[in-house]
Length: 94
Image (cartoon, rainbow, N blue to C red; front, side):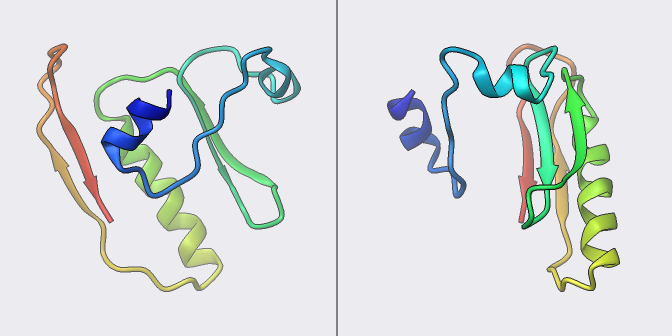
């Protein structure tokens, strides 16, 4: 997993749950599962599975939270290069 994460230069922490303890605690039913949590650990949004176009929904939820909390942010520029192909690329610029 380390080479995968290093190659992509993620700007967030990646954790592994080999025994599925956290997944059980959070009732994860599918992969991938995405959670948005606030600084207190309260889960604000969760999504299980993936289809092209879900990125827009993720951004809407994130923006809704940032606006509600009056947290300033730069405008998100969403570049959708996906075309429902296995090799499709989707970029979200922050």
